[in-house]
Length: 447
Image (cartoon, rainbow, N blue to C red; front, side, top):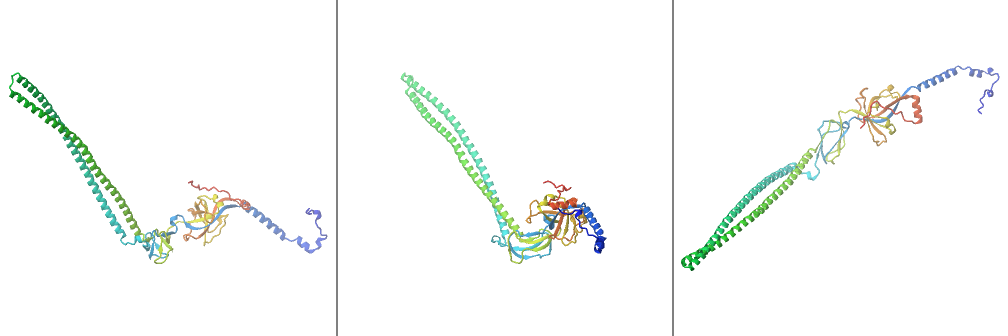
C-alpha cells in the first residue's frame, strides 16, 4: 500500500513555537503561484480549442509557368568548327540575331560552289526530262501513223480480195460460157461428120467444124487456167491481210515498247530530279545553319562552348538564353504520402529566400512575407529526389509576387488543407495519422 491515509500523517507537536514552520505555512506567493498555474492551465485548455489549419509543406525553387519561358539552350543543328563569336555573356539578343559562325568540317560539303553545282545538275536533269517528253510524243505520233498505215494496207488488201472475187466470178462465167460453146462446137462437129457421111455436107465444112471444136477446147483450157490463177490470187489476198496484221502489230508493239521504255526512263529521271532538288534544298538550308541564331528574345546567361577553332557536333548546346518576358511560378516538391491530399486549384502560401518572413503554418493569416498561390499542375511520376513535383502560379486574388524574383531562387511553400482544433492536430500528430482529406472547391478536370 502507498501508506497515504490521514491517520499515518506525521504530526509535529507544538509546531507553532518554531519560527520557520510558521513562515512556511503563512507564505503568500503560494497562492499567487497556484493562481498562475490554474490560469495557465485554463488558457492552455482554451488554446486547445483554437482553430488550426492543416497544411502540407514543400521545398522548391522559382521557375516559369510555361516551358517556352524557361532558360533555353541554343544548339547547333550541324557539326562544324567555331570561327567567330558575335555575342558575350550578359548581352541581350533578339530572335534571329547571330550568335556565332561555324565552318564546315565534313569533306562532302567542302566545295564552295556546292549549291550552284547541284542547281546545274537539277537543270540538266530537267532538260533531259523535257527531251523524254518529246521522245514520248514522237513515239506516240509514230504509233498513230503506223496504225493508220495498217488500216490503209488492210483496206487495200480487202479491195484486192474484192477484185479477186469479182475476177473469179467473171472468169467463172467465161469458163462456163466456153464450156457451153465447146458443147455446141462438139455437137456441130458431130452433125457435120454425120451429114458428110450421108453426102449432105462437104468435107471442108467438116474441117471447119473440127477447127472450131479445137479452138473451143483450147479456149476452155486457157480459161480454166485463168480461173485457177484468179482463185490463187484471191487466197493470196486473204493471206496478205494476215501478213499485214502481223507485220504492223509487230511495228506497233515495238513502238509501244520504246514508248514504255522512254516513260520508264522519264520516271527514273523524275526521281533523280526530285533527289537532286532535295539535295539542293538540303545544301541551301545547311548553308544557312553556318550562322547559329537566337531562337527567342532574351539575355545570354552562359556560353556553354568557348574559343575559336573548337569543333562541335550537331545538337551540341552552345549558349543558354533566358527569355526577357516570362510568367513567374514555383515548383515545389511534396512527400508521396501527401500527394492524394492535393488537387489543382488548391490554395498555397509561398515565401522566398532572401525575403523577410514570419511564418505561422497553422495560422496563415497571421504570417508575414508570404504570398498566395494556386496549384496549376501536379506531376504524376515521382522525381529523382523521391518526391512529387507540383507547379504553383500566383493567385490573382492576392498581392502580386515580387518583380525582383529570379528564376532558380529557393522557395518554401505550405498547401492549406482543412481547419481543425489544435487538440485534434496534436492528437493526430502524436498518433501519426495523416491530415484530413480535404475536398477543394476547385474541381480537378478529368482527362
